[in-house]
Image 1 (tube, rainbow over the protein chains, first blue to last red):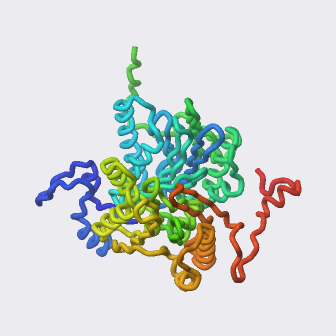
Image 2 (cartoon, each protein chain N blue to C red):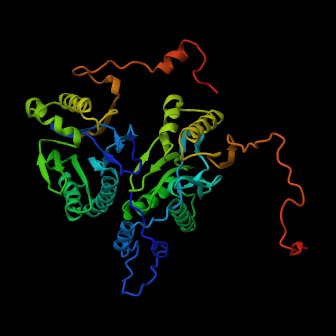
Image 3 (cartoon, chains in turn cyan, brown):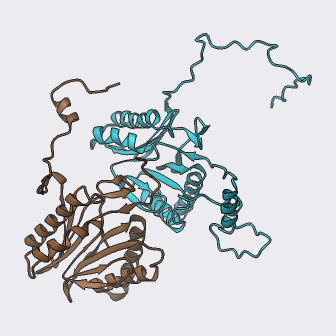
Length: 278
Length: 234
């Protein structure tokens, strides 16, 4: 999996920033600085790591619809950048999407398709279908040939029934009754393969999804913190943010810490409280 | 043993298309791998292009899915303009044109098979590079390497529908036995004047080949059935 050029945060906005040299706007990524980057790497400069969601994301189809699950750890190389991020993204009132891979890519692609779906709803006057979201995602990802590093678990319930799909960075998709993605996918899939069966009830489904995410949290270094769950049924979606918190912060002292006044040095400036709004 | 989960999805695969007296039988395994991990153990590699033409896909999952979608779209328009079902030859040539003209960017080998009223059952092979080749039978994918000799010996002209289907299932199961990138279940699609029939053979219903072990129930099922408490329950 390649990395983007250092200049491409500017380029990625869709309309490319014009550099000193003539660069015709072709859209997509600009690879002009890749040679320079390679030369810099050889010299010993480190490429800045970008935030990835190490991740365990799962989805399963149960008797009334679809349940999605995700962990909440976002990593920047070996560092945990966000201990409680949201990986289950909104696509439509009846469609949600879990994202693994580069956090910026999953956010951007799900936001983009979500707004495309809303415009489509206005144009057609109907509820969005999961296959519409699927086709929009896969055509976008395919056209970027895997450089948009977004691996997604897309689930929802529409007029044709419950649907669960996985979408890979190169644009291929699979349709499955249960699916896992991300670095913790093997740990989660082990749980699903041993315990999944068709026609689970809502509580059984939530329990199984939580177990699979916990398996990723505890056995995969790229996943951790809390369990988010999203239950989608015909007519109703429940987003259970932090459904389980199996990693509470424990203080060294069971009595907790006592932060007394005077322990923190003051600069001498008086503290002016903000104006309360009337 | 580092599994590269960001490797592009490829279908290692065994795909087969065979003509018989009255139509065609298409067969495939169901394994999609990402590097050394099986991403989908029950994929459907035989995709519909029209009511009477199906395509077996191998190679890059993304490339073959996108090309199939384009060809289905073009064939739909073509059917409306023509006023009757598209012929298998037209479908195969559309696949070939897209495959050849984008040969630098695509990595897929497919087998197009179907039935039309003019030529009956036909199989067209469109491998890497975009050649088109009409054949009485075709094999493709990584598992096909193990089947060339088998088909040289077992293929005969003018088989019946059941003989053809049995041949396809036997061939795919032989390839699954020897090719690591093929596995899962065997799916077949039979297309003839009467329509389309889809079949599905689970792994444990397939014959066992040289030194293959009997399938047995998961230890987990055995333990749970005997009433003992769930192992490692929280």
